[in-house]
Image (tube, rainbow, N blue to C red; front, side, top):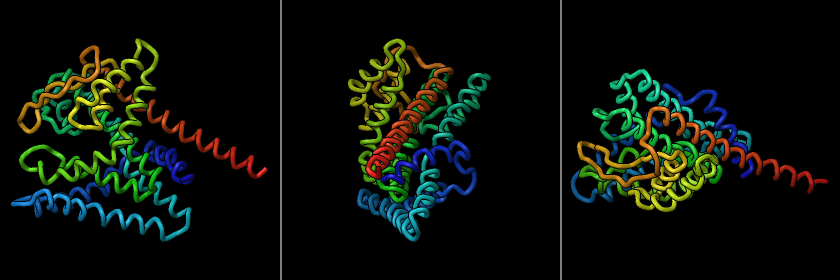
Length: 317
């Protein structure tokens, strides 16, 4: 457990220094493999059964390999494997870069470019979105992925080390690929979606709490974040994303949610937060909220390590 706690600042430092690998990222190869499995198995009858079989074929071998790899050497070797797996699993800098790219395009009034860059972040149709809608979509993605791509991987890295963070990241990737409620994926992707819900249950609530605590004292932001989390989070169609996005919307005093177009169909989503409609500058505010939350989480980890160290010193003396 001690090594896993130390891994958190190390992994964040690696991500800050290097970001995501631009070439040969293992998740890209995994995504191609998952696509092939889906093409082979997603058809005919018993799609739910085929979906959990595909999930097992995709996730279990890689997780077992990671477990084997992390246990073939010394504790130092395990630490190195954990650091590399954790770095590859989180997307803190990448998420910020994507958000800032949309913000830059909007500030330069290049709407076509802003719509394209927003489409890298969300699955909804962005081709006809205006500045407010693009800002809303980007902010929602930053808030939700602050849990899915940053804090949740760190949580599972602490709990289960390298195999845990790899297992979580693969499950989350399959949910992003297969977890749609449409004719193609409703049955096939249901197991992947439910597994992702289970794995994100605790991390999502930690993230919502961090967004609330890091909202700031101005204009009652903490109170707004707490109220939105408690009253609106449960109205969202995702049991985990709702609380995360609601607390973030309340912290920023923004109106999020509402209608969005997915795969050509308008989806009426619950309203989240309170206050004004989002604008371009609010993307930067959302990124700052995520940063403060990551710093707060890391600060707690470092405090625990220091207290643990002091306790060991007192025992020795």
